[in-house]
Length: 346
Image 1 (cartoon, rainbow, N blue to C red):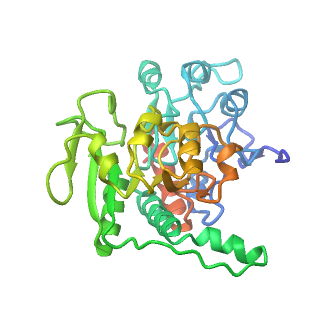
Image 2: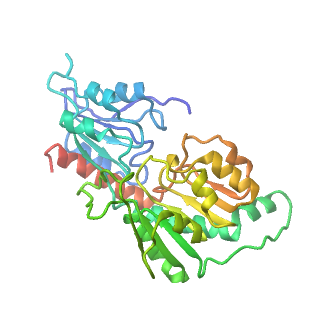
């Protein structure tokens, strides 16, 4: 994408506190989140590229910022350390707050922020409906092969492919936080038998800002929304017609072993983190017909340019879980409010 000129929205000549907004798009559909920041007399720097920023770019555009509204770009310990250092131009200024416009916090080194005294917030509520609705839409698309028949018509064919009903399917949800619960709620009217495998330990609570700590590689809790408790993740994989993943970790959960354990001719949906699923093993299972189809909104490397693009029984979307206009507006406004609260303005 062609580089755009860096946008500095402050008209003040006197040095003012600085906020860097690094999301790929901000306040496009509603200006109120931006107006809220402008009203409080901040110098505002917007992402000049319209894409996910690289490490050196984050440092370049966020150096001297008091606060950052963050997207999915990575803030590791080195970046955070640099951003908290004062400079000759800004002797009083160092990073104080990161407000994540979104739910996931895995792109921010939380241990480093605690050591450096940086407050971190996210917006866990706003994208819940958007991601859950996309999940159900992807499931319906997979089962009824909508994308395949759309492509067929565009190629001059009139091909009718037999699909499957969602009604009464066994759906296994991996990760039962806000989004997982909302997916279960949306699937209830279809008469699905829903079970979930939660990636939180017994008695573990979420913090107020939505950060989950120690969520994997411990004794897990497995429960059933309807019927008896699920004894293990293995059982969920073996018995579910559809597996839908909604975790907030980069740990791989679905590898070759788990994919081969999945019910023959079942479907897989991942709208959480790309690292959660072994894409190579998934490709082989889909190509060989062990799985009927898969839908992925997230990938190990983004933008995605892997071999899953070869298959017509896979739906690929470019990490658009929260990309519903109403959800984006709420997320951006909440991110702006969180930032100002963290800076002691609200």
